[in-house]
Image 1: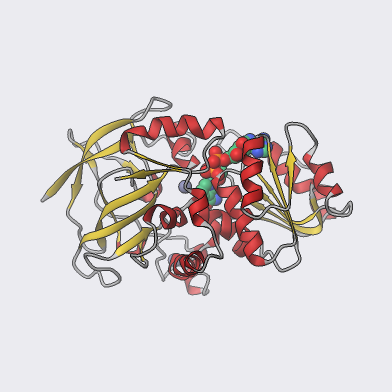
Image 2 (image 1 turned 180 degrees about the vertical axis):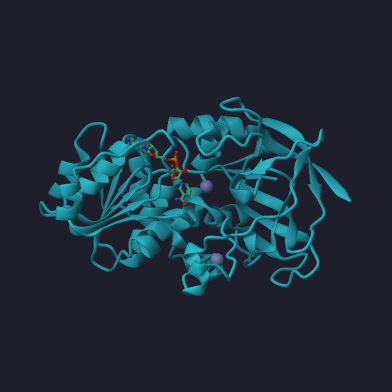
Length: 361
Ligand SMILES: NC(=O)c1ccc[n+]([C@@H]2O[C@H](COP(=O)([O-])OP(=O)(O)OC[C@H]3O[C@@H](n4cnc5c(N)ncnc54)[C@H](O)[C@@H]3O)[C@@H](O)[C@H]2O)c1
Ligand SMILES: [Zn+2]
Ligand SMILES: [Zn+2]
């Protein structure tokens, strides 16, 4: 049986998204069919729509989702129909050289569903990050389902499926932020503010939020920033140094992903400090830095895919902290919208008024 459901599709580069009928197959071996409850609107969805990730149009957008498993293929044992799950886009293989070295967070062979979802005319859809969750039902690899407590708010915990996990993980897993560290975060959208919340959870004592939008900075203060820098008005490198005894921060996280913000991060970190790139650059971007500065300043320059998370370890742990009142996931949910409002949500992303719009299905 094939399911006919409505989903949000980006048909061609830059064109407004449209609500289309999508055909979703029954799960085959290793696959799970999931009824989506909520899906957050992430900047990566906008990147897809604008052609910044790949040219494999049409895309089925949406990937920060909570759902309920409705069917599983033969041989699936990690989840069963009725399970509440948060979807992840890095289902680890267990066999590649990263997994074999005991570092599954770097798995080089992550799984997605083998079968394709299609438009009614048979055109295959590319699911955003192998998920595609602005839809009533989606097909994923069973390993992309992480079972979670059904009592926690779906909209809030679903954000762990991408942006919030990427941000928290950029601070805690990739950046290795420790008690007493100074941390600066450039770009305070959903990902950047999550990095701030992650730095606060890890015990950083100076947490500097940097953005070009004053509204974003106000919200960053509510989620744990101790200082703010409006980089549309002042030089963020000088400002971060001034707030860290002239030295620069121990860890600087670039949650924008542009050459200019990366350079700011590079020079705003202390000697031997760490830069974490979690914002996603586009294929046309180039970085130029004096190699002597790369050498002379020491430390480490790291990239963070998905916050170097292990969904099976990190989602339940963060949901526990949320339920204990130590991590305010509710604060990331600015508004709840319907499936036909995704295009408006992209516009709001630019207006700065929203941290996350979450589609409720
Ligand atoms: N690495 C990962 O695994 C991962 C996961 C999710 C998202 N992302 C990426 O992270 C980035 C941020 O995503 P988001 O959902 O938070 O986006 P967002 O649009 O909600 O936030 C971006 C923020 O950056 C600010 N900004 C833009 N240009 C700036 C500049 N020059 N200097 C300072 N601030 C600036 C904006 O005002 C905004 O507050 C995107 O590139 C997204 O694709 C990466
Ligand atoms: Zn692997
Ligand atoms: Zn995302």
